[in-house]
Amino acid sequence: MSKPFDAATKALLELDPAGWLTCVGLPITGPVRAVDSDVSTITAEADTIIQVGEPADYLAHIELQVSHDLTLPARLLRYNVLLNYRHDRPVRSVAVILRKGADSPSFTGLHHVRLPDGSSYLDFHYAVVRVWTLDVEAVLTSGVGALPLAPLAKVQEKDLPSVIGRMKGRFEQEVSENKANLLWTATKILMGMRYSDELVVSLLKGVQGMKESVTYQAIVGEGVVKTRKEDLLFNGEKRFGPPKKRIVTAINRIEDESRLKRMFEQSFDVSSWDELIAIL
Image 1 (cartoon, helix red, strand yellow):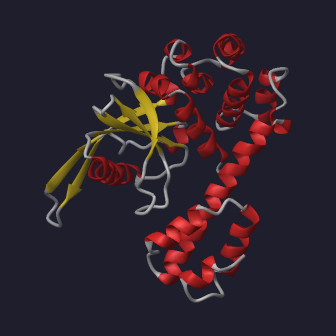
Image 2: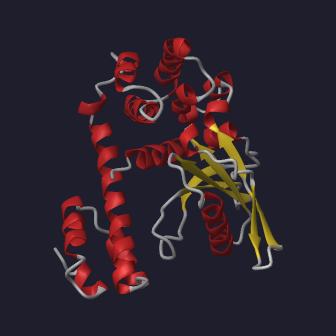
Image 3: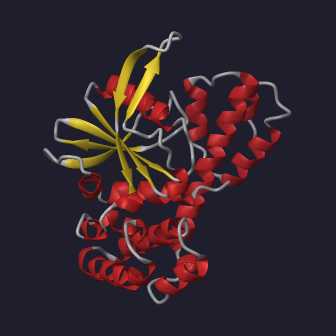
């Protein structure tokens, strides 16, 4: 299944990392920039990490969650440990739950790793931000890159036209046309998780021809390619065992979606990672 929201939200984090830090309540103690997670050789997941300070005071891992996945706290712990080991810096982990259907009472901000006798030997602390509980005014006055979250915040449907109008005003004043297109594209993708297509189209009518825009097509295309790589690595690992670093690197360099599709389809017929990456 295509995951365009993955690419859209990653683009937002890279566009305005400071705005996202403010929105999720993390401190800004120095210069802020998005950096590559640099743990792709260990896991197929590829998140954007925010470095705070120069040199880094800490790293922020913001995980945006749209599906119901009870392994979320364990995944956050894994990333936290890997990033800390790789960069030798403290890591603040934040789970941003984008819709109520993805939430769970088990997302408490504290993850216990227990021994067989039930005793806890490791306590991992993380932050949880449930977007629908955020004050919409706070989101609307945060960084421009976090504004696409505003329609998902604590807002009544009747107030959405006003919210969209304020977003439009800020985009026109604060960012270039290309960046505004990206922001509106992300807004549409995110709104589609809560509201009907008819309402989204009505609210964004006249703002941008999303489906026809190069920005929209690029984000959706990037999401498809990312998903193809994840599926290929997942299926390959089940058949051939964990891939070596060179295999992961080779697959991550492929940007041809049709080739990735062929590789996945033929992954059931070949007998090794080397045969798989040789497929053109």
